Image (cartoon, rainbow, N blue to C red):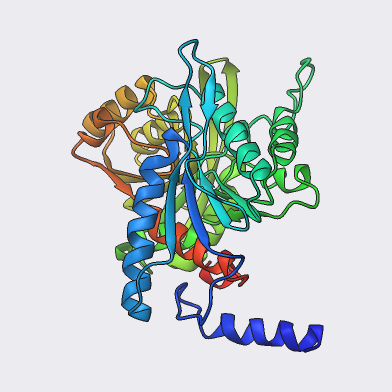
Length: 364
């Protein structure tokens, strides 16, 4: 078979499997293993459950996936990784939550566990290692601040990940697409949130009284694609950081005539300062009557919880919708207007397609 014939066969197979799952006659790369560091186990288990359910339903066969937990600690707090089974020749997908607010671990500790786990899998013969980091820590440090002596830490993270032994990376809506360049020849799949947000907000489709709002210029591209897909108008805010923890919304550009509901979209909510000032201004200025907030990543910080509660009580924040890219704490989940949408179905389909060397672009 020629190279072109092989490529044509793969493309035809991918075209018949656009929903994500299919019934391939054989498994790629010698068997599928889903491994997880401790902080990534919550997502790995949900993905495996969905993968097994879909595979059984589509093929009628028993599931082909194995689960592998890899890390623990020595008494002196050093991370220890020990593989309890053979991985040589296997196609391994390694999960880790670099930010895990429901545990006592911190980002640096989780990052080190991920790097050691990847190296262990490489040294013990895994044929192919895909890192699944739904929230990519350090991605916001992709450009040093002007007039500050700072490193490009996002590049360092890429260098360490590549040296640890990963073959490719999957992450959900990172802060900047610029990180593509940091990984060089290593494939990196940046999963796009637009289709999920459109589905979540489908009840607002084509409504003349709805407007999508970007809290800053960085979110404008996301909001543009979202508003086009949802068939609503859009606006963008301009912000000025006046201090380490102080944000000022200087202007909001868009046509708010006849608008009742604003859908604010952002990639990351940390302290919530930006969205607080934006939503407060939208309501105080009488531009809209209610606000829906959608975010790809919620870091579960105390300040954000307090601001969400205040916005709901005083500034007509009707709903907050986030994903489980980061494990969400009970404190946030107990808010009556707060909902968490899982990435497990999306990630299980991504794994299936990558395992069988098929394109994932049709999914988005």
